[in-house]
Length: 160
Image (cartoon, rainbow, N blue to C red; front, top):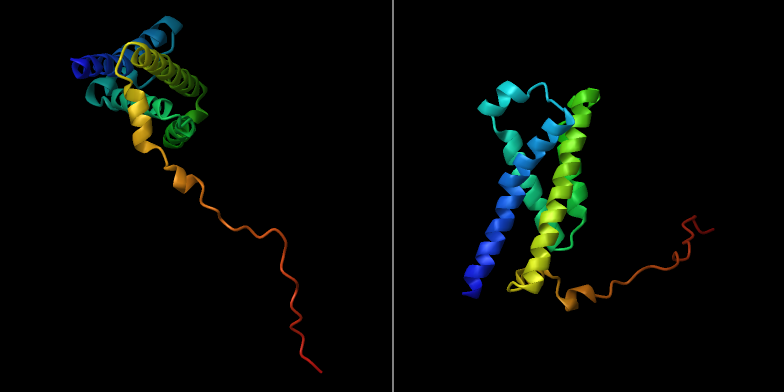
């Protein structure tokens, strides 16, 4: 029964992160008046933006659960590199920034809610996931010798 409960609240969190996240982001764009010039025709033919949003928020959630905040920087950097040339246009740059920041904020809110529920009422999935990927203590305590001062200079001039 506990496993079913864990699966259920995790599935709800994934749906909130992905599908509801896309819907909420589109709602934010409608409320704010942002419009992407490519939005009308390409969205129906190529749902790549939806898939990217899903993957982005899932990767961010994994980073949050595992306390790997560098994942946030990597996701934003990857998206920025992919859209680098388009960022010259102010309207697109603002659209991109609002969407990216909303996606990050949404992932933090939903994942934090999932973590709180998991810790208080759930089966503590997050602690088990963290244990699975944690570096063993023996690997953390490896003593790597470091050179603290330069070795003495060797005179390589020919001897007389």
